[in-house]
Length: 590
Image (cartoon, rainbow, N blue to C red):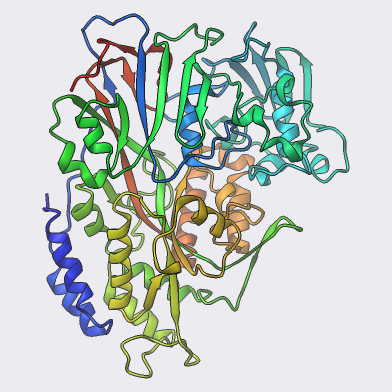
């Protein structure tokens, strides 16, 4: 494995360059071998030590910014809030290691391909965390809120419009969703225009998070996102419930005695927001029991003897995105701007070939990240293509693409102008405080400068997480290019992130072939595995050709677990969760 100390010298060499083609060839000659062994970890931590009764586990939410505190899957758009809801909210459906729904959860289901319906049956006597009955009507209510004309969240789109009657309800033409029929407290049927693989994919087209009508039903949908019932008194279906909140800083969860699997072994879980800059020393000191640690710091904590390291492939892809248009809220669609600065696919492809993500993975992340050859994370076997070339590091090809497209240095300043001779200054945005964010951003900028592109940080610095998200969503003109993460969740269907009518399609890229391929992904033809694989591969090939995004890295999530913790399991599809975790001592191992 390459020593990370090499990287600053490599970066310094790039900084010394002036951005011309001579720098490209010099960089190629001086780059070290960037291969790295992809590290493997266990996903389960067991202990033979006897457990104490109850106790409080301390969980570190590793975050550069404060969390927003919207405790509802229907409204939350914050990765930190999503992590917090892992304790208090739970899907009504279980799933296996391949992320396919099973019959082992709070609800079972029957698929009728001829009628294009799914019939759902809830277990008897399910309860919310406040003791109120959880019924089929609460599932309907989630659809009613998401599809409501006044809904302020970002979930509504093509996936929900696939439910019969949902579009008419969303447009205010109908007062009810025709395709959802509640038969009684434990049974309902949902009818779809088309059945597709996402219907049976965990986290997919079959919405799995009910909404408590008994708590929220009197609140106008337009006011619901800011209601104290979601921010202070949230009720859920998970093993723990919110007891107290210090806004943006901490949440104390208590055991939910109404949890469908029985009351959890722990009494409490205290979650506190901890800076990435201090989390390693906090874990070494035994101040927290569980944390997801930054990969770039692996060498500093890999030998701690008071923790056990577990790891799994993250269900996410880091990427470089190009701002290519804008979101039209009135029409509910993305609009591509043919005159946009980044509109030329040749320019975008050149910027992709200029990046050496193999070195980033090896030199910074010790093999805990790997260069991505597509947008579908490798955990989804059968959806991606391990043999695809993707964008390999080829600065000579990047320079040739720019030359052929007419991006030439016409004034001799070391930077290329546009084909019509105008200044080409590109603003690049990235989130502050991410894993090695400063180093990676500086490296990318220097590699783009090495092929003659004048790229600098938007706003002059990395951007705070929430402001960054707001700037992307509002199509702030200060951003031309950005580094983001597509968190797929357990469903790799790209419609919600790349669809023409998706507000989360932050590139605003639209393309008729993309529309056609997404339609096929969402059609019954994709229920057949061989056809689904071919469609997904063709879709990813289109992304490489058009380059609205550059897939850069796939990540390994590293969980540091104090050695007093028992029965900790991060395996995808595990049927046992936070409710089974115990502690073997009153105080953490230090």
